[in-house]
Image 1: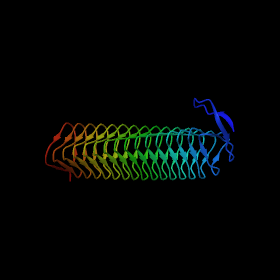
Image 2: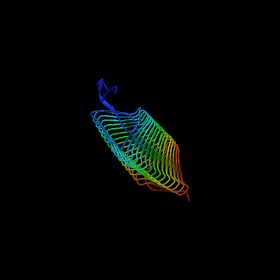
Image 3: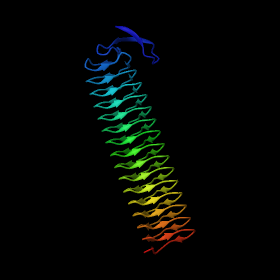
Image 4: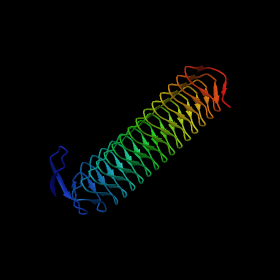
Length: 303
């Protein structure tokens, strides 16, 4: 038994070299004989590494953290607090996993990403870049969260969804399917972006709003309240769709146009400029509504 300074503020403490790999293990920590601990890796505090887990390179496991199963922690990654890494999960690069977070299944956490709070990353999900996943957020299945993104609160990203750029998904928002949220987009509240929908640039999708199908929301557009954008519809520019409004088909809403109330815009219709479509108005076919028009009731059909 020797002593080693783990640079955690406790100075030199009783420790030993692990027989399988030669890494340092504090006397207060546990590394099972079946687990691999590289010579430059460290396990200290009351951490536990068990099963066929591997801690390689300059990685550190500390606090009350647990790494087990066939999990791998390598690079300069850190797992600490009450975090758990299990299954065949991998934590690498400069990633940090802390709090009561859990990484399991075949999940991969890499780069300079941070997982903390009660967050979970599972399945074949990947979190990379400088992404942060925290709170009670969940990233699962084959979802990808990367770059400088933030997923927090009770938000869920799953399926084959991708969140990238500087996008934020938080609150109780959900992003499943093959949906993409990127740029500086924000999806929050109880909003849902699903199927193959795309939300990008500086857009906001909030409240109970839904964007689905192959719809696209871009620019500085906003979709909020109980509004729905679906099909191959596009909302862009500084347009707003809110209330119980619905935009579907191949319709386009752009410029500074507003669609709200119980209004519906569908087919190949276009609403643009400073136009407002509201109340129970239906705009369909190839109709165009533009300029400073305000349409409060009735049917506008371009066919």
